[in-house]
Length: 422
Image (tube, rainbow, N blue to C red; front, top):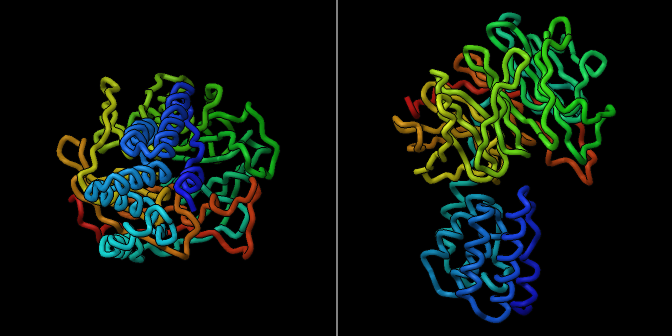
C-alpha cells in the first residue's frame, strides 16, 4: 500500500460543536493531508499539532502525531505519542500498519510494559443488587437515606425504579412525570426531594414517545410522584449529571452546551461556562466552596464558587484523565468513573492543597469483563454504589441489541480500604 492510501484511511471527520472550530479543524486536516502527500512531513506535523490543539486526545490525531514523529525520526516524541495512544486504548495493535509497523516492533518493550499495566484486571467491587429488565439501560443512581431506598434511572425507558434491600418496590413513569432519557439524579438530604436530569437523547430507540418539552431538570416529591419545580433547558441542552450543595443549590452539567446550571427554589440562578468539549460529572468539595467538573475529552476543571473562576486541574500522574464520566468527592480526594478509555476503570485521585493538581492516582477497578459500562454512582458513607451495566456499547444503529439478556448490576465498593489521599 502507498502512503497516500494509508493517509486517506486515517483521516476522519471529528464533530466539534463550535462552527469556527470545525472550520479551523478541517483547514488543518486538509493542510496536513496535502503536506503528507507532498512528502512535506514537517508541514504535516505542524498542522496535525494545530488540529490536536483544537480537538485534543482524539485517537486519530494522536496516531497522526505518532506518524509525524516517526517519519521525522523524532524518536522520543514518537514514544510519547505511542504511550498516550496505548493509555487511551490498550487494545491497539500497529503491527500491520505499513507506516508504523517497524517503529511498533522497535518499541515492543514499551508496548508490553504499558499493556501489562493497562490490562491488569483489578476486582474489588461486589454486586449489591440487580435490575431484572435486560433492556432497561440504567444510567444514574440516587439514595434516600431516610427510607434506605435507591433510585435507578433509565436512558431509554423514561422511568425511574426504586429499590429497598435489593428488591424493586416502586417506580416513577411518564404517567406521573413527563420523563425523556433520565440521566443523573440526587436526593436533597434536607428536603427529601429527588432531583432528576431528563434530556433528549437522539438516536436511541425509546420505549415511550418523547418531545422537547421533556428536556428539563425536575425537582420531584418521590413519594407523591409529583413535580415540585421544573426547569426548562436552553435549546440544544443535554443535561447528564447533578449535585446538591448543603444549602440546597443544585449544579447541573450540560454536555452539549458545555456549561453548568445553578438552580434553587424554582429559579435558574446562574450559568457557569466550562471551557471544555463534553461536560459530564460534577461534585462539590467538603466545604461546598469548589465545584469539580469532569470533561470527557480533556479531564477535570475546578470552579471557585465565590467568583466562578474556572481553571484546568493539572494531572501530574501517569494515568490519563480523558473519558471520565461520574466524579465524587470523598475524604479529601476524588473518586472517578473512567469509561472513555479501554479498559474502563475506577480511580481515586489525590489533589494538592490548592486543589488544582492531581498528585497521586490509585486504580481500584480495571478491565472488568463482567461489566458492560460503569457510568454514575452514589456515596453512602464509606460505600460507593454504582451502575456497572449501562448499555451504551450495545446499540447498533440506535437500537439496543442484546444477544444474551441478563440482569443489570449495581455494584458496591467499600472505600475504607483505600488510603490514597488521606
